[in-house]
Length: 348
Image (tube, rainbow, N blue to C red; front, side, top):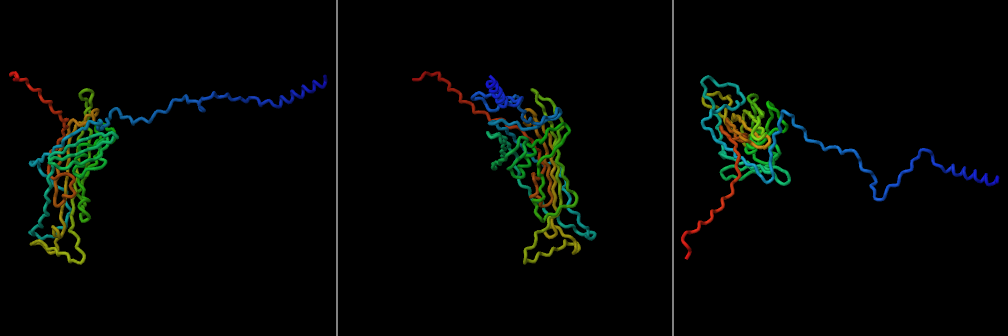
């Protein structure tokens, strides 16, 4: 009896040693085929939304649809009766001439090249979402291609003249704008660097103004909004184009003073340098359909004057031109031929 009781006490003590610490939780067995990580019950974070347009502002963008090109025709009409305006003055020279001395002859003005009277702009959206521009001048000249952004910014392509024209009528502001706000265009109306290292700018007379203003936003038909834009651009410069440097080993020609002037007078022309300058002024007004993303109208004046051989620096044609942009309607399908009228005379 005593032996059995002792054995029972030993068994109970051995069992108590195997008991696990209190508070431990046995993990549940996961059913076969169940995912290792349970799905999260939290809602996913929303994607970053586009910046909201303020209530009193508008975002001007070209609305292009794949397979439906948008075409405009820009007409340039030379206004021969427009008054000419002065270009920027050249560097002032010291007046050393005697009283009654004959002035030096002015440097001749280079003839301006002919400019096409019309340009056709075609905007298209390809399958990859890129926007393309094809600009075709009238007169049979080869078209020029460019890549543009959704606001009409010329990313690449086009020569200087065509690029300036396209920028004037296509480029829209980068950010949303309110009535009364202004922005600038990526134009290069004058490029004095094209005159080379022999050109020396005048210390005064240069001016540059590049401003487009949103005048108003008014309601249109069928819930449309009409944004009225005004353009005011001006670029002006003047200076002296020094004569070409002498060839090594060859004695340069000695400049001769004009008749009636002192020998130490600063002669003009090839020996003393040619005075030159240029001025470009652009004014315009357009009405842009905000929801449709297209122009309703655009008209402006491009006025350019040139003094001396400044033609390489000109980014627009010399003269005063009235510019007008008009949409080009899609060509109509040819009419089907009318059915033959049956003859009243029975066939033999």
